[in-house]
Image (cartoon, rainbow, N blue to C red; front, side, top):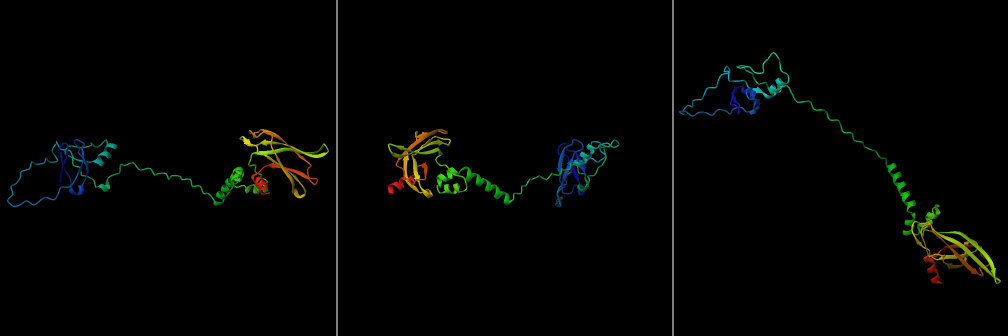
Length: 268
């Protein structure tokens, strides 16, 4: 069969078996590449139809013809030329090689390196331990906020040796002295209130109590500190007197007045 270059219209004769269902070829004259397909089956000419005179195709010996070269074969010839052979000779005939026999010119693909994925295996015991440490840190570090939200937790913290100071105030340098003034016994109690927090705090009233055996309260009264509000790190002294204290008193207990004390006083 005959194929024609779409650019320079040069014609070439090749075997239909070589062309197969179609393949890519290159013109040896103008280097144009195109996809050559087999010719369709010739139609039957009806009897009596006029004959059409076609121009003869030049033979292979014509000097104006150059064989068509398969594109893959041409690339191989250009990449590794042979000094003893010319690329194309006038009148030479070259058949197309079957596709299965063509050497592959594609560069081999590099094998992809498997991506390295670092998978950390975390043991449940380690996770539980980490969560336990974090929970302990919150329970210990935020115990003031927890006791403010649930005052009943104060006794639990005190039982494990972690007393919670919700007010941010402390009572220090507590002293008690008994005196006689005009023939009357007099109990004098002194101390200091200190602000241990990082913010200014109002100083509530102080509640003092004379205790007997078993820390039983015998008598209680209140007093105020020298200053009603303390900045961080500041302190204020307080002084309280009680005439004719209980004779069986054994100690003095001082704390800040709480709401329960007011409720108990109102109930009496």
